Length: 134
Image (cartoon, rainbow, N blue to C red; front, side, top):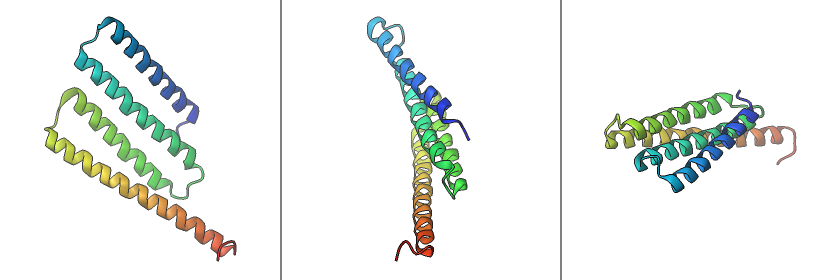
């Protein structure tokens, strides 16, 4: 999987970029306001995705349900691309876009719930089989 250090450095670089752009815009107003908001939104969305990837990369080695984690990566990656594309191009009508993002969000929640339940019950079963838990 992706190395945690690369993700951390990417997240730090995005934070620095956002801070520098914010300072430049605050003092000079060289970027149109709508473009500035799109840039900052893109940085925020990408930073959130990188943070999630860092958490998943950290848990991947210990997880017995790697395919569910990879499913979460795929779903959140798809959502990230769709949201970023919608911010910049408005390719979809907003009601259609919100339905798609809402559907992806529900599936992400469901996969995350299944992952948590599977990991929790799997660990407890193993502990019970080894007579650590009654």
